[in-house]
Structure formats: structure tokens, C-alpha cells
View 1 (cartoon, helix red, strand yellow):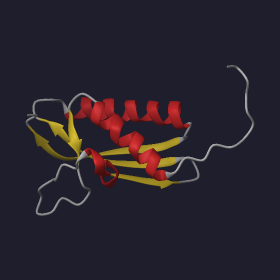
View 2 (cartoon, rainbow, N blue to C red):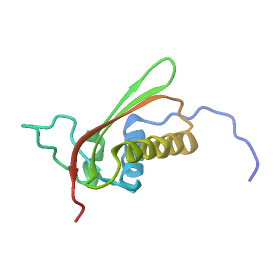
View 3 (cartoon, helix red, strand yellow):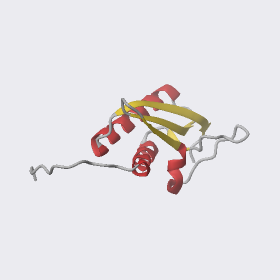
Length: 115
């Protein structure tokens, strides 16, 4: 199908958050997505049904600003996992939702041993 259909694509923030959350869970070294407010310094892993809570999206003039709160696997390079996460999320959003990305911030809430 090479027919082009004219129109505008509108994707809700919930859908974008789902794309970001599921992409993050597929990245090597990411144990899970955590809530942004670590109570008493303890990060709580969010279940797959609530991944949106660990992702903050802020639309701006130059594109979408994304904040990710993740828990990383013990023994992996935080810098390498974070860069991989940024690359994968950027690819997923630009490829699937055609969203312009302004910035992605990765907040590592905790380091855990994967079970």
C-alpha cells in the first residue's frame, strides 16, 4: 500500500507513555520502571499495568520532553544502559508515533539484582 492519506495524526500522552514504558522494559539492563517519588529513598517497581506513572511527558515548542524513572540491573554500566534507553525510546517514538523529541532525562532510582 503506497497510497498516502491526507490528515493529521494525534497521539494521546497515555499512548506515548505506554510506548515509552514498554520500550524501556525491553532494554537490556533495565529491571523496571519506578515511581518518580521514591518514598524514604526506596524505589518501588511499577507493574506493567502502571508503567505510565514512572514516565513524565512535557510538550514544548521544540518537541517532547521526557523524564524516565527506572531501576537498573546490578552489575551493568549505568551510562551504557541509560544511553541505550535514550536511543531505543527515541527510535520508538519517532518511528511509531512520529513525535519530535526535544530531550530525554533518565533518572536511575535504584540498582537491583534481577530475579
